[in-house]
Length: 242
Image 1: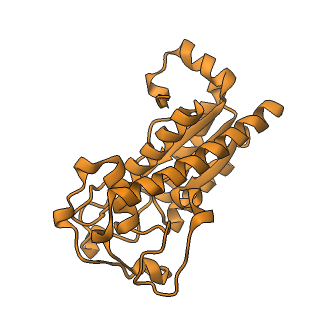
Image 2: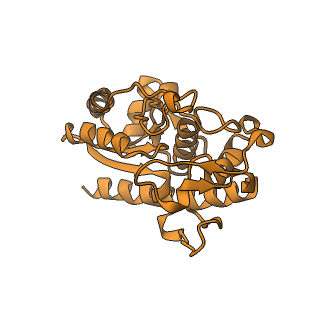
């Protein structure tokens, strides 16, 4: 089934869909440095791709992407060119709350806000916006939540831990190779991605993007969509029972 994009629906068609599937997916991303081999919109592109594949499996509607996430760790001043780090937490919280109110008025009863970006200030701002709208049942998720039960942590952090996320390393690069191969330039991939943010897990501090492959991306995609689609079916069943 093709993904059901909200902005492509007529009012009549959308009303009919909401009657049967009153659950909305909102992809959220950023504009952020992801090394020279990946585009600035990795977080946004992957959140859309995953939401749209889950939509195709379940018939739920996908809202327009929000590409205004909070980026504090990889600022342009530190050499990470291309990151938009000027979005304030209050701005994102307000946008999330205002959109949820608008989607509530359409008739949606439950929303999954799906983030492709991983940063605590970003998470907090989204959750704050969600809390302001009590009329909508809301769930916050990231791509890592879709494979949490498959993660294998190894003793050696220099190895690639199956299903464990990263920043511009083998996890994100493999997913991009699967969903958007034309946007990946492996000839520009560095040997390692070195990150030094405070509180960052040891595994994420040094990753190896040249290990990425489309085959690993396909493996990740299969696990993520399987889990995500099953979750939405359960949520829809609970809504119909309610």
